[in-house]
Amino acid sequence: MRRLLIAIAAAAVALFGLAPVAQAEQVPPETVDYCNTANKPSGSVAAWLDSLGVDKDCVEVAVTTTCGQITASLTNKTNLSYGVILVPGGPPTYDLGVESSHGGSISFAEDEGGGSVEVWYYIVGAEKDYLTGSGRPNFWDQNAASVTVTTDCEATDPVDDPTDEPTGDPTEPVDEPTNEPTDEPTEPAPVIPTAVPAGVGTLPETGAPAALVLGLTGAGLAGLGGGLVRLRRRFLQP
Image 1 (cartoon, rainbow, N blue to C red):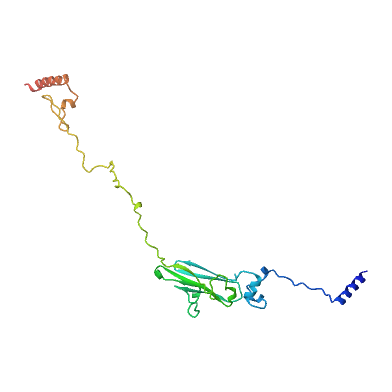
Image 2 (tube, rainbow, N blue to C red; image 1 turned 30 degrees about the horizontal axis):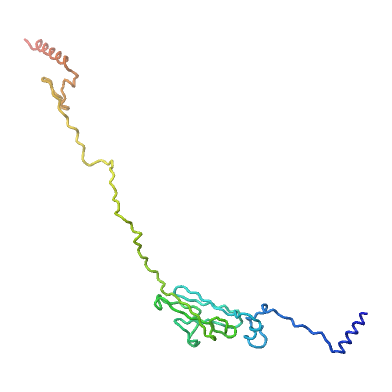
């Protein structure tokens, strides 16, 4: 039975000229490296990119600025050569004999251009089809972009804030008393003389009555006086 079917099929091919048709394998566009022209079929790069329906994002430029300086960075995914032209003070003339890349960076002097400089930039390269109509600044569309670079970079002196100053009259310190000795010597208190009874002497050192120093008062003095009288009569009389 199997042999019969094979024979019928062979007869049909011979009779009607039928032959199996091989289907071409379809490659998804996202798997194609369209930034590499080695993968391009015959025809232009523009026609190839249009057939794939992809964005023209193989060549891009970004610029960064700091005070007094601009730097251009190029992203090139292709196998071709590209560069960025910088035109300080622009607008550009797109004369590649005059305008240059400046090595991808320009530094400006202090306060150049009166405090700022406008810099224009655009992409040039080997294949225009990766850039024309992309909206990116390029030589062929002559749609250069620009940025402003500040050149007033020196720090200015800070302005004094009057609100930081103290208000009101300053308070003077109050002198506090100290226990330090004075230079003037202290004079002794004056001695007030005491009235001395008649017949009683005083001691020269203190000026006090001699009778008080000896501890004799009243009757003691009277007895002492009587004894002296008796001694005088006894020894002095002949």
